[in-house]
Length: 174
Image (cartoon, rainbow, N blue to C red):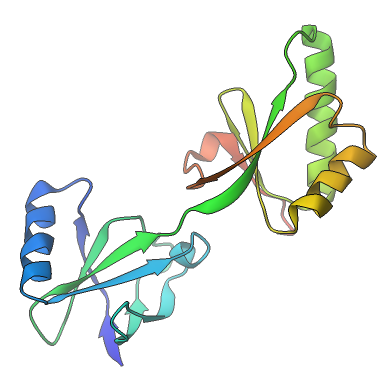
């Protein structure tokens, strides 16, 4: 297993690095791996690349991996490009036309119900995001039981989880 620990940067922020990654890809010196957002928060990962290469990623504690991060190989030319898989999220939006005091009531009630389920949430614009971690029907039943579907619309999206710490909450138990 090849051990990797040196991050070169991110192709979405460094055009020179993006060009280098393109060269590595053309020279067949690039390995790629797709991880989920939970794995991206870990400092130690055992990975298998798209070509079957077994890798050990060892990073300083507290390091978070982002989509487009590039890591250098220690034993040869080339590198590893990391992709983050999009996750399915439930997007809840208040139905239009509610007075402000009722909006507050229903948003607090929603937060209470989601918190009791230990489901992480994020607030983005006018919507509340909840990762789909159970069958959709089960999640919707929880909301229906508390009469929340009368006041909220639901849609589903595949997206990355918001990184802004000011609009993301998780329960201490999750």
